[in-house]
Image 1 (cartoon, rainbow, N blue to C red):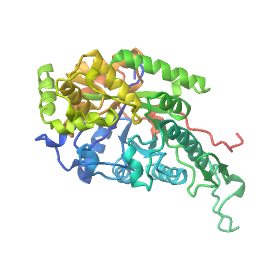
Image 2 (image 1 turned 135 degrees about the horizontal axis):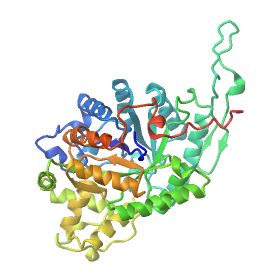
Image 3 (image 1 turned 120 degrees about the horizontal axis):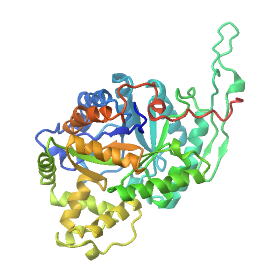
Image 4 (image 1 turned 90 degrees about the horizontal axis):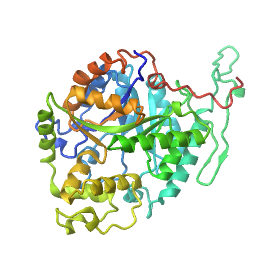
Length: 441
């Protein structure tokens, strides 16, 4: 490895690919989201490419217009446990909601995955943005945006406290003396707060890497504040380098304001790469996918980001300024990103839904392996990010192209590992193991 900064790369894994119409493509495995051998093969391909981690998103509410990869798919932690047995090195991260879960359950589940994978687990902290989610959890109303983040802050602190329940050498298992534990190294949390009351201790030994890596993806003001406080990896949607640089600088400053080291918090925007041996081939691939988007579905997906407004009432050639949008209580940062993109490029409704339905506001790259490598290097060198969350529009082709054609160029330029040098996800990402709060030294 050269003196250049090593680029971090994760695979944001989604069944047939991130493009909304990927399942319709002739090369797609249409049941990909529920095909275990296929998903295991993708995990092994990502590990062959020496990626830092696999990431699985989740949602707790779907409807007829949801992305086909979301309508039916495995529960993330269950799938990652299967992947843990089929891989040796790559990190395994998943989303879990702080709005519709309990801290004890989440602490136990991710600690279990960390043990089963020998220290490769990561938790993406989300607050659940879809209002209808509450209807699946005996709720009549979805918790308001800022309250969800207040709950999340308390939730994460409880989980971290539970992960510290057992110090090193707490389990002595002395058969002769009949002592299974050293009681001095067991700690009850005894938490009583605004949202939760949790006694502890957690009924599983401390995680192999101290804590699973904590990830956060909120880009609204409340989301950024939470990320700056608790996250070690930040996922974000940034569709141009200038906005990415602004976000990167701002979030690192917020991290510092909470007394944390900005170098120990990695920013990894999503990138939606369409790779061809020539630019013409790449553009043809993209257009082929775009032409597969049904109009009704594209409008529905865009509507979800625009506060649920009925877009079918507008002509497809309408501009953003023509839309009557009221308060958006969902993913506010994504709404602002879409609004800015629409106004900047004066997009029609048809152009906007195709762009959003395809990449959900993430940066779309269309070009050759060399051009993608140039872009990745530029973003990292110019402090727009520390790496990328790879979102192949079509699987398995998109991942295979990246591993076979882009990774060797990154390695040749000295900005990407040739072999895994550590054992845990923290090792891969260059993150320190957190000290147990109860440890004396």
